Length: 201
Image (cartoon, rainbow, N blue to C red):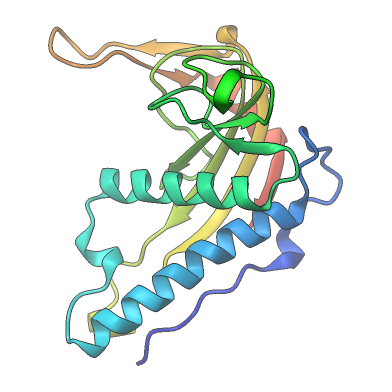
């Protein structure tokens, strides 16, 4: 079975959800399609060489990091007012252009943090609880179909975009050597899920 190009299902967008920062549903559609096209191009080349798909070689944490960076760049490219935060590891990932000097801020409030996860429902660890607009892309990777050449392409199945506050998080204990993280608690994740942008059921 040849590598297939995934397509965003435009019928699965929530057209009733008001979006902040002049964002449009088309921005999300084009960003996800950019990622699909990239994986199609790369995996087609790998398959031609007899190599594994990128989806099969990246560890889950690496995959999530790659997707977050790609989606941030694509959203910035298509968005009307948001741009990439030029501060290394700055927060949020996307900021309103012209608000911060050099479009760089270590910890700002005007923008959107981008997260990706394979956890259905959008629960994802963050480096700290804060007031923010959070956008979570949920994706799935087929690692089980055999033979491997018949596996389905990586697919985004949910997207959420909600405004959350410090009080919506619970802190996660990681021990002496672990990095402390925070995750939306039950009520916080419910708030995020109510603001769904895209959902494949």
